[in-house]
Length: 66
Image 1 (spheres, helix red, strand yellow):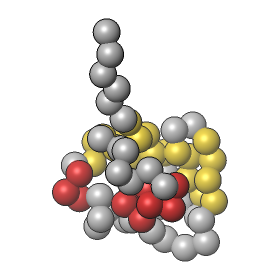
Image 2 (tube, one colour):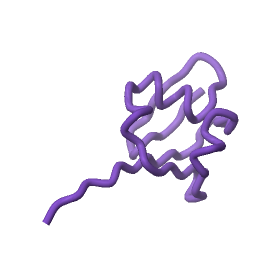
Image 3 (cartoon, rainbow, N blue to C red):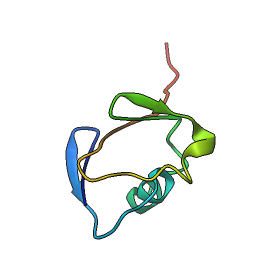
Image 4 (tube, rainbow, N blue to C red):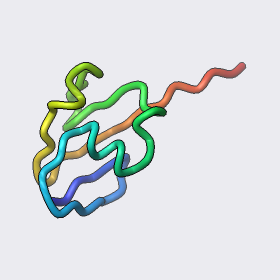
């Protein structure tokens, strides 16, 4: 399965959920918001949201500053 994550193509051997993908990338504790194909996915749905081949995933982390 091929996904585009924050503009970068990633290859996975099998289907996975949004949370499983984040864990494989080592960023599950850093992501504050996620969108798949320009649609926001609520955090409580990450563990059950099944990604599909060619999905475009955007993962956001909010950074404070001034």
